[in-house]
Length: 300
Image (cartoon, rainbow, N blue to C red; front, top):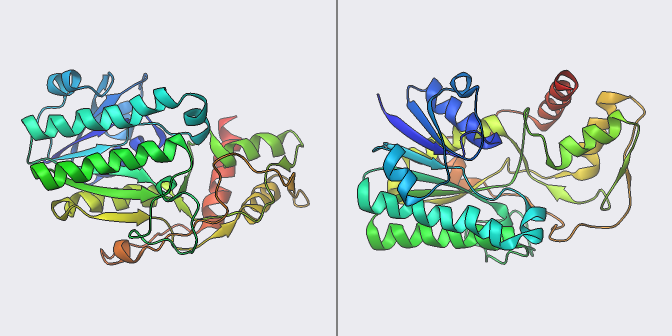
């Protein structure tokens, strides 16, 4: 049986990745912060509650065929409030992981889920992987630094690593960010939101993410960098209108016209590279948003 180590396996993306690998015949180990009492339900046979350091990796990781490095900073806002902490979560942890692979398990294929935040404010859409990187938040800067480490270890030391720049990821189980906040607001009769509503994002369901990261492991020998998005943009006002309608047919969002620091106007991914792997998103955003609200109502 092939083996995979998922760092941050108890996180939102990590647990879906773990389950996808498990469903495809992999033995899954997980390592990261936090309690994970139901890890077996997500396909994780062994869970190690520890930071991603060279010492803990040497103790727990073994020699996995694949490592999906989901651990790291996960919030633009938190990175602005606590930039040094975010640096440690993202850059230090990635450095530790790559050094572990270089020294002890050079045949492992590494998949690094990065972020579209590395692009910053863009001049055109759709965004290609070859476009310039100009992150505008500590979160984006740290993701770019982690990518640079991955590319250096690939070129200098032959580490097999695939980088996937994820756009706006959502799905049942995500208890933060826009959809979670919107459900909390609409359920209490509040329909006021930041921004203009015309901001456009490329929304990709987490189950499609898990499939893409699984495929990326197969191509890691070529050290690709590719976008993880749906390849289509949807305005925030349309997303929130869909959420509101799931609560009350006549409930519509209202916008303050004030934008949050670090938020770009429009993000749409060019997914030509991912499409070349015969991958395509399978969950339409209407279906995905409706399913998310149903989950939210059940979990309250």
